[in-house]
Amino acid sequence: MSRRGVCRLAAHDDHPTVEINLPARQQAAFDLGANCAQAWLASPNPGWLWAGMLAERDLLRSEAARRAFDIGFLSRLHQRLRPPGDAGLPSG
Image 1 (cartoon, helix red, strand yellow):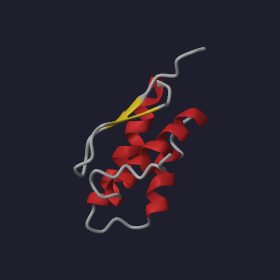
Image 2 (spheres, rainbow, N blue to C red):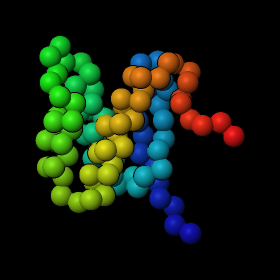
Image 3 (cartoon, helix red, strand yellow):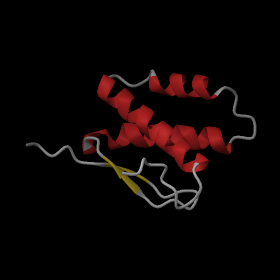
Image 4 (tube, rainbow, N blue to C red):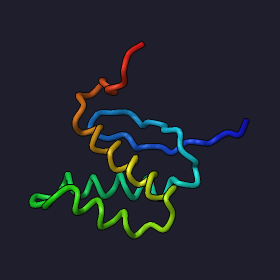
């Protein structure tokens, strides 16, 4: 059985650092997605969320990198939307 590794989502909005089961070699694409989401969240006039996401995502060459980008992007938004201390994971 091979170990996939993890990508790490930095602590933000009173949420701790999170490890997500993705190949560690995809950390750069994952970070790009999280940073793209953060830029959108921080912008006073961000425009359409989907447009910013797709413009950056389409620059990535591999499907694996695009998937890591998507997960990083959505994970950062998830941090902002969930109250601190609530990971939003299903129980049981």
